Length: 372
Image 1 (tube, helix red, strand yellow):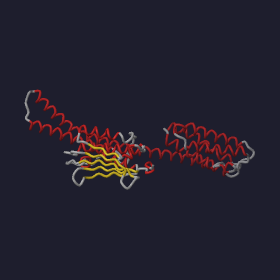
Image 2 (cartoon, rainbow, N blue to C red):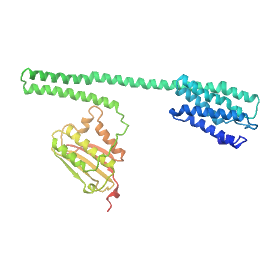
Image 3 (cartoon, rainbow, N blue to C red):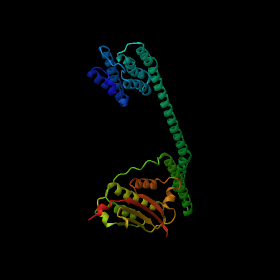
Image 4 (cartoon, one colour):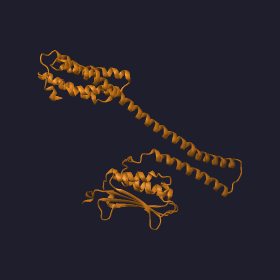
């Protein structure tokens, strides 16, 4: 573009040609809220420069500015593609006129110049307008396809709610009303009958939860990493284990003394807190007849650049993984794995040899923080 400007016999004209081309290119990549102003400015400057060069005794002999011409034609395409028809016609008129006048900057005045103007006005401008219209139709079809997919998903979720979740919730309400009605009528129920009724309510609630988790499995993007947020130092783990012990089996916390007085990166402390929190939640939900839970946070022996977090219980029954993934989801452990792997660590879960379950997270640690 600057080289084309140098074809002008006068330095001010060369500079003006470069500025005009830059304005046309800037309008082509301008954000949508500035597009109208940029198009009007570019078309006005380009047309004014052409009119001015027509009055000069000396003009370029070989090129009027092909980069500028291409930018003006592409502005027509963008205007037609992105704007309603009436507005697009108004927006495209300026660049179309400027593009048709552009060959008049050339010094030669023969039939070739007329042919070039005709080619631009009769063929190039309509072609770019048709191209913009085709791209507009393509955008519309793509949006309709996306909307059809979203509508199908909404219908599927509506059917899921109606056929499964609402059914199970209705069962819960029905059995609860029956129990209240029997109690209000003064009918005494045997422990066996009461236990059977409560078991039905529990089963319906579990089925409703399973259906809801299946919907979450469809709605959640498994490739998007979970958001992280600092939660403070490792001292908060003691409060977490004490809170757990108040309503469940006793939980003991073993915290490496080297970690208590060191300032760790907030993303590391957040990950440690979340691993312990989710593991204790799974113990409470799934580890039946657990008598003890042990939480250990320490620098890995023989590996000062690794922080090891483990939560172990001696419970029996459903394992956390089995419970979480009974319906194919289990986003608590998936979220933990995402968080740990995003930091360059790894998360493993599995049964203990003598029963129970263990959640183990290994996180990167800066060994220089323990020097001295």
